[in-house]
Amino acid sequence: MATEIAGARSGKVLIENIGLLFSGDLARPLLDADTIVVNDGHITAIGARADCDGEGAKTVIDCKGVALAPGLIDSHVHPVFGDWTPRQNQLGWIESSLNGGVTTMISAGEVHLPGRPRDIVGVKALAITAQRAFDGMRAAGVGGGVKVLAGAPVIERGMVESDFKELAAAGVTLLGEIGLGSVKAGNEAREMVSWARRYGMRSTIHTGGPSIPGSGLIDKDVVLEADADIIGHMNGGHTALPYRQVCELCEKSTRGIELVHNGNERIAILAARHASELNCLHRVMLGTDGPAGSGVQPLGILRMIALLTSLADVPAEIAMCFATGNTARLRGLKQGLIEVGRPADFVFMDRAQHTAGKDLIESLQLGDLPGIGMVMIDGLVKCQRSRNTPPAIAVPEIR
Image (cartoon, rainbow, N blue to C red):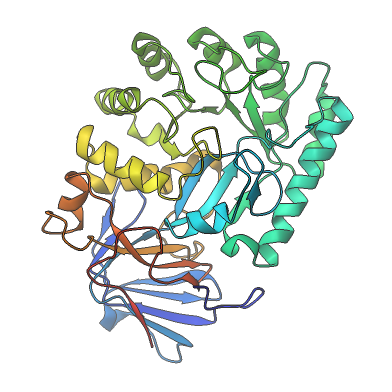
């Protein structure tokens, strides 16, 4: 249930009685604080209640001892236009993911648009239109206010440096999954990635076997040669590379390691363990790779956190960083960290009713999903008790 209208400003918000505070920062994943103060959508104070000025707060939220984390970031989605996916002919998938704690989504290309243009003029036009449309959609409050960063062109042969300059000047900041278009060779991709990087655009490369007709195998040699910023769905989307190649990508590249729900779970677990052994957990980020043939996964990011915590021996507070601060830093986002000055995008959660875990951390270690009691974006409450997660034992109250 949304409790704020589109275009509203949060004013001053006092959030108190936080039980467990996830920071999103690998260097310090848990914060010793029980209070956050927000003003007009940004964090202004974090600390003990006695040290935080809550006077004059427009909204007071009593957390009732539940955990608070940065809003989850889905690093890999395939939107089209609006809160509808033609791949599954499903409405409301973005708003449904909000009920799974996701406050930001990043497009890996609007590839499911029926009749998607492949000519260079059309590629650029679609990217600019998608970027504008999703910005406008958020301003109108469609999709629950989730920040969908869209307009990710799928690069095609024949594109030249000036095309990337033009896209960047128009506000496009992303490249779609390399390999879904006609550019599949590592040397071709590397040149275009370099051009995109020159103009501040971040890139992602498809990794593994083909996911849709027209895509193809992208093996570790192509990934290494292309040197995109993000190794997209390293655990396959859906079909993963052999584990030996996955290890080589972890070892020989310094780029982001993206693990997705719609991939090979075994490889996700092994890749996370290998990243830990290599001391490069700061490179790991999470996505769903939906909507796709396997559908929409409103709880996909939560499921990845529980998977890696319960089966890859990743501490829950570290896995939470994979879905928040790691993605923020690898993607150049302001949201995703609990720090003064950052956007106030939060998810409030508690252990689910009847879990065997004695607290939220233990329940995640056992593989159980948390219950979400509230989600905020820019200091505004966008939903309260989630309709998709199991019911939480405790939920925050608005005063």
